[in-house]
Image (cartoon, rainbow, N blue to C red):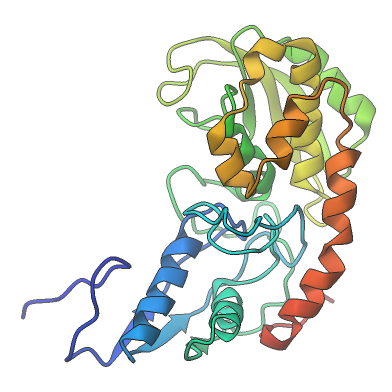
Length: 294
């Protein structure tokens, strides 16, 4: 029997009763499965076809980090105005999106027993993509993904994507010491040298650091990555190269402008973002399907 494959770019037509979505996720706005799901929800609503979402846990839990998306700056890696680490499942985001956009609500089949706890290190983990192979990579992603908009390697092309970070010429020992002095919760770090086999700086020897998470509940990805960006900006400025894709990832120009301001402190970004989080929690509360962790 012939099958019709329905994607976010396929017009929905007569004869389709429902679109069923089951997508793994990593709890970060920049992970593109989110944009795909929202496109499907909109297309289904416009075609008056039911959207059914088989929900999955958010592996990095209900913790919120980062700022939202500036109006008019939405794109495939910032598809909706949510914090970078939004603390929701895809089913919950879909419920929020459809309610705020005036679309027919999706039917969400919830997970049984999940309570927003970040994934325990060493537990069973189903990789949603080849570049998200471990729980540590997923926990690091909401910060390390921002390096994709700079001249720094985010570890693609290595066996440690999003935890091996650096570039040619970076003093990894000094960077590791800088992060150790910062005493960032949940972090252990070592200096590293690595040579990506593909992607950015393929074949070149990079200096940098390898990140380890020793406490997923205490860990916050953005303070760690902002300290890395600040160190490289102030000591290896030519390596940073913040570009237009950083604006797309971060949902506006504020982060790139900070990267271009010598001596700017990470708190200049973190404090305003954190001030927005209570409003985010109030906004999403009617659409939540799961309790907070015990």
